[in-house]
Image (cartoon, rainbow, N blue to C red):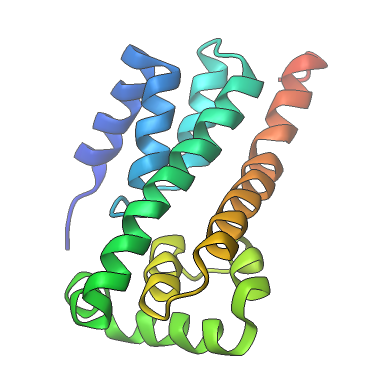
Length: 161
């Protein structure tokens, strides 16, 4: 089993040293390979004094740009590469979910235990129309990021936290 504490520390240092650029990089890497939700680091960035609106933008844009890379790799190398990167059972669940629900399913994937990066690979492998994919990635990330960071932002603004 891999120890993720080193990666988590590295990502936290990105936010501390580079602020919004760090948030962008973390968002960019999430759909490609990194296992931590971007929201964790977005909240850390806000706690460090970054403007929450810019944090939201950088997180969503970073994730969307990273998702383009994932889509390209998946459409070019398909399931063959995905099976080397991901557990076959998890990938099969993502495939089944995608075939059943399509674009709408991808929009709601943020609220399931299925890893986001697997669904990005599935969408690329099965060549979801690119415009639909980009729209679904961006909207799903904005919704998920909002759900996770807005209680923190509102609590902070109201001096509850």
